[in-house]
Length: 163
Image 1 (cartoon, one colour):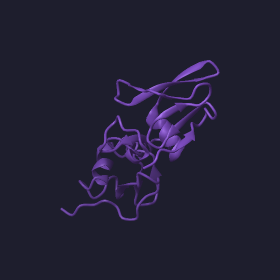
Image 2 (cartoon, rainbow, N blue to C red):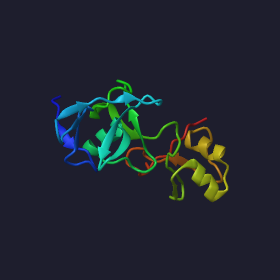
Image 3 (cartoon, rainbow, N blue to C red):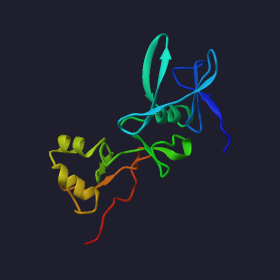
Image 4 (cartoon, rainbow, N blue to C red):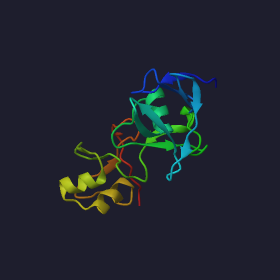
């Protein structure tokens, strides 16, 4: 894959990011900016705009420039090549450990998370979780399933395991 460059959203004309996960300063002397690992393992670097410094994860810059800005409730996930590889092919949006995953019930009502569904309906979280994961047929008299993670719409067939 050949390296291609795009302006960083909010820093147009000052910084560019490549599809391989490298960041370049454009104004003044052009040079590649080296990032450093944060405590979380993500590579971060400092961008300067009008004298204000901002610490930014490189994976967030890559996804915003090459895919789209991070949807609400999503996280940037790294693929098999690990946290040090911020190329577009190694990054995706998704949910981590089931937190914030959208759920739907059999009457068509959708919720942004199991926690929100439990709060709104009065049905216990563990019951909704069990129904979403095929451990129970229903919770609170409804069938439950996770919505499609990537696109935010629900699948027609609920996840259900026959006992």
